[in-house]
Amino acid sequence: MIGGVIMILVAVWLYQSALKAKTNNLLLWVAVGAITFFVVQLLMVEVNVYLLESIRSGETSVSYEGVDGADRKNIGGFQGFGGILESLFFELFPPFAGIVAAGLIRVKFITKEAISVTTIFGGLKELFQGIKESFKTPEK
Image (cartoon, rainbow, N blue to C red; front, top):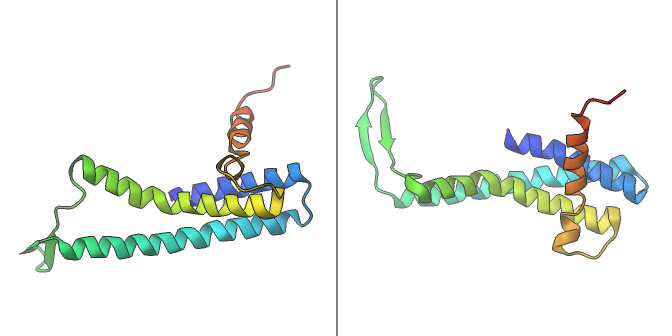
């Protein structure tokens, strides 16, 4: 869910950047950036699953038989402050990696600037300012 909302924001960000840079094949580059975001996010989710399974296999668990007769495992991971940070990392790292990948596409092929942290994330402030302005009612 979070990734889908972020993907829409990334597509709008790439569109605004392409308009500002007067890029040829505007929608093609927006699609390439959005697909790159999606693929990188999907790969990072798979990496997260692999990491979670490796963490889970190292923990001790207590099996018990539930009401419906199925065996269930009571795994005590993701508890406490460390568990909260771990869970936030596993939830937010895939979309963040997708944003970085889309930002690299934006810098290298859309705006054709030098790659740096400020240019990769450039234009995000204007994106959110535009969203903020869209909620204001026009004065007559």
